[in-house]
Image 1 (spheres, rainbow, N blue to C red):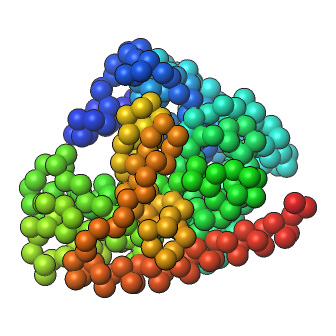
Image 2: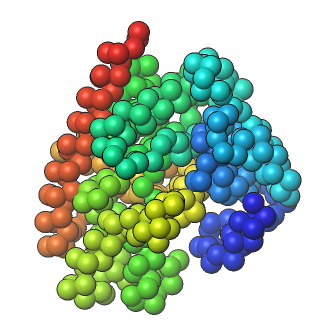
Length: 361
């Protein structure tokens, strides 16, 4: 973790990302929030836990993972507890062999949390089709979301569980069945924005802090639609370069997997993006509204779920912004993105129905 801390300090984060290594400084209102990270001992979870522990607005951080994880959650929490930060870090775990569910055993972990970030689930393995991945990860997400429904129903739940396009609608339906607000469930698509901004910087030389490319649609393949025309720097890129740049944003995850020779995926960049999202939510809860692209229940298109600019305020999702004016390329791509997204939304809801049908609920 010390090596990773050095890596973090070397990154040219946007000025608003965090104030480096401040000790016990207060958020603007003085309010402190409780954050839970589920899957906190994993490849995304560890750096994400560290970045959130460094946020001045975080007073308590719960790090949860299964006891079979390569690194125990207790080890991650103990390591983070040595940082010169004001946040209290606690570890929680469940033995998967016990059959225990988070909603039955993890009251202390989730109770009264303000933000729950879930970088959990299994990666797609050779020979595993998309329906297999969805079935496994949907069950993992459902168990965690039901614990949130029981112990912190007012929390914002940020999901990094693949396939996000299918899991988020299903988890919104879980909340609806519990009589809760489905807009508390948010799919974290921030990494698509981070990548789009960086790729525009590489072409134009404009500072990344001055680039803000909205990325709408979903969070997989052709459903990812970066709107380069809506950013001043992106709009200057020659039209003939846009299709390839668009495709690079769509396939950026594969770019990382290939560079890691199949031995990993986008963990550090995903943690960075997840922390950006988490900080935006906490700022909003603290009375400083922030806008980030996110995948939520939405009525700005004919689809019930869609990623677009979302403003977070004191109660979570405050405003879902319309798509805005599109270029000719973006208009054509929107139809493609919606077609893929529609099918993946339906897949998620059907899989959830099957999951409930196979349970005693």
